[in-house]
Amino acid sequence: MFTKTFSDTFAKKDNLLTRMDARIKLAFAVALLFLNLFGGAVVSLFIFAVAISTLLYLRIPTKALLIRLLEPLGVAGVIILVKLYFIGWSGLPEGLMIASRIIGAVSLILLLSMTTPVDALLKALSWFRVPRTWTDVALLTYRYIFVLLEDAFVVYSAQRVRLGYLGVSRSFQSFGTLAGAIVIRAYDQAMATSQAMRLRGYAG
Amino acid sequence: MKRIQLTALIGLIFLATPAHAMHLSEGILPIKWAVIWYLVALPFVAYGIYKVKNLSKEDITIKPMLGMMGAAVFIISCMPVPVPTAGTCSHPCGTGMAAILIGPVLSTFVASIALLIQALFLAHGGITTWGADIVSMGIVGSFSAYLTFKGLKKAGIGLIPAAFMGGVISDWATYTTTSFELATALQGKESFLNLFSTIMIAFIPTQLPLGILEGAMTAGMVAFVMKRRPEILENLGVIKMQSVVGTLLLIAVAIVPLAASAEEGKWSGVDESVVEKVAKEHGREAWEPFINTDQGDLLLFVFLIGGAIGGFVMGYYWRGIFDKKIPLNPSFPTGDERGIP
Image (cartoon, rainbow over all chains, first blue to last red):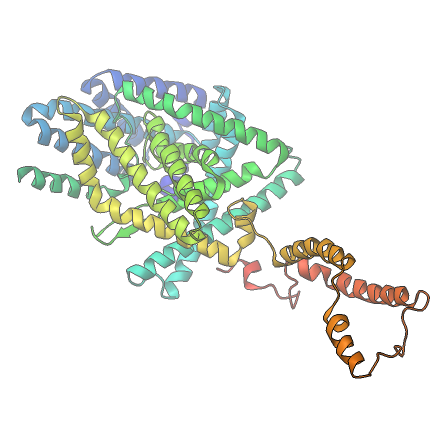
C-alpha cells in the first residue's frame, strides 16, 4: 500500500502530462507556486480545482489522492481555528486565505509528482544547473528507500513474532533495535552498491 | 480559562494531524518568509555539496553511503511511533541520528534531499517551505544533536547516554524552531510572542514524550550497531577504536628504551645485591653454570633460535590478532554475515 501510494507508479503511466518534458512541467509548477503565493484565495482555489480535476481526469485513484491530501487539509483546518481563536470572526478571511494557499500549493505539487518520474525530475533539475553531486545522491536515496523499506518490514515482523513492541519500555528498545538494523543494512548496501558501480565503470 | 481550553483544543487538533508536527506544510509561508528561509538554508546546503564533491574525489563510496543514509533516515522518520501520553501516533525526525553518524554538514545535505522527496511524495513539507524545513530539521536538528553528542562524549559521559541526549536535544530544538517559523508565518494582527507561546504549548503534549522517544531510539540504534557491527561506527568516525593488541604494542615499544637505559646504570638486581651477599656470608659461593652461555656466541645462538621459533608462531597467528574474525566453520556463515538481526 505504502509503496503504491507514495512511489512514482502513476507517473510511469502513459498520458498527456507524463509525455510532456519534465523541464516544462517543473518550470510551470514553480511559476504557479509563486503565483499561488502572490495571488489571493481565488487564484489558489482555482489552481486547486484545476489540479484536482486534471488528476481525476488522468484516472488517479481517489483514495490515493485523499491519503496524500488528508494531512495538509488538517493543517489548513488548524490554521483557520488558530486565526479564529486569536482574532475572532474578523480573523476568518485571513485564515481562509492561508488555508486556500496551502491546498492550492499542495494540489499543484501532487499534480507534478503524480505525472513526473523521479529520474526525469532530477534530470530536469540538473538541466537547471542543480549540482550533479546533489542529484546523484538524491537518485540513490530515492531508489534505495524502497529496498530498505522492505528490509525494515522484514525486521519489524521478525521482532513482532519474537514478542517485540510489548509495553512501553520494550517498544522503546524494539524501535532502537529496528533503527540500528536499518543503519547496518544501509551501510552494507552502500558498500555493495559502490562496488557494483565501480565494476561498471563509475569513477566518481 | 477560556484561553487554556482553546489551547487544549488546538493541541488536540494538532494531535489529529500528528505526522505534521515537524514539517511546515506547502504554501503556509508568505513569500517573504519563504525567501528568507531559503537564503538562510542555501549556504549550508552549498557547503555540504562542496564538501561531498571534494570527498567523492578521494572516496568513491561517499555518494552511495550518503544515499543509503538518506534512505535510512527517511524510513526511520516515517515510522509511526505511538505516543503514550496522547494515545496517537507521531514520527521521529531522524536527522539527529544522521548527524551523529555522518556529521552535521553532511547530514544537512542528506536532509535537504530527504525533505524534497518527502515534499513530493508524502506531502510532508513542501517546495516553498523547503528552506524553512531545512533550517529547522536539517541545520538546527543536525548541529544541536552533533554538538550535544560530541560535547557530552568529551565530558566523559558514555557513548549511549550521549547519543540519548543528542536525540532528545535535536528533537526539541527542531520543534522550537518549527514553532518559531510557524509563528512568524501566521502572524497577522496578533502579538508575536503570544502566538509563539501558544504554538509551543500546543506542541508540548506530543513533542515532549516524542523527544524522549527519539533519544531512546538514537541510543538504541547506537547501542545495537555498537554491539553487532562496531566497525561501522569506527569507519564513519563516530568512535575511535583502539584495539587491545595495538595498545599493548604501544606500551611495549615505550617500555623497551626505558628498560634498556635502566640496565646501563648501577642498579643491580635482588639476586646480586642481597642473595649473593647472604650466600657468601654463609660460605656458599655461586659456582659455574652447567651450561655456560657466556662462552663464544652461544647466547646469541640461543636467542636466534628462540627468535626464529617465536617468529613462526607469531606469523601463524598474526591474522588472528589483526584481521577480522576467522569463522570457525567457513562453510556455514554466522548470523551476522547472513544479516539476521
